[in-house]
Image 1 (cartoon, rainbow, N blue to C red):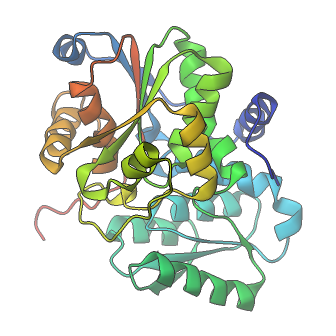
Image 2 (cartoon, helix red, strand yellow; image 1 turned 60 degrees about the vertical axis):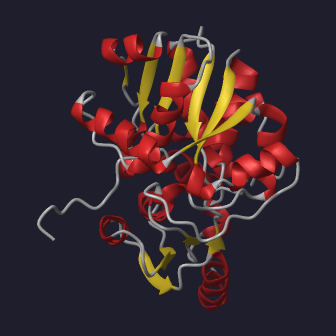
Length: 311
């Protein structure tokens, strides 16, 4: 179990460790998007990752690193969906149980995914306090090892591998756009760029959930409130570990409106033909208005959302 900010060697080790289990996701481009933003851009399709999101990387790394500690007891986490599904999937790869605490308003698609991967779900009120309290209760009953969705160095090292792969294929990137909620993807990307790249790292956050922006600007951790945004996966607060990394290695955090994310999502589906979730549209939306240098890289973080036009 990592107890320090992941080093260059930690990230390379995580990549080797999870490589047999994950996809090396496709990197692609769009001439229309390049023309629109005035610079060449590439997209890293983590919505095509195992379990439909980059979260499979961190979860698989954490499970493999801690397999001996959790043997026979399993793993536990609290998650609105993507991390829960990823941990359930990762635990199943080594024959262990996974206990997932989910808010009662979690998207149906994400609840179904956790169940499909074998996760044992306990629902709770849609607050961070309720998630943590319920997780502690279930953990005391099961003895399972807690794997925090983002405030965990094993998770961060795993998430960093998405940017590591992108930089391996496109070492000349000058700007990187990453959605930010709890900060696991952004902090991992910032570390990967610090060790392996030379880009400006830009966090992308909804106006309606601007705690990362406020924390970054003030230099003090600001907790998220229960904001309403279409980017359901970006509602969470930074943790102390992700906040420290982001403060030291991220260049900028920029916010976007709900309308800007909706337009970016429509572009992703209509022009890129990529079915991403709204959280992934945050990076696209910032790239559309940010004046950063090119070439730029944009990580499409996930593709899990409810799709039922007849409901």
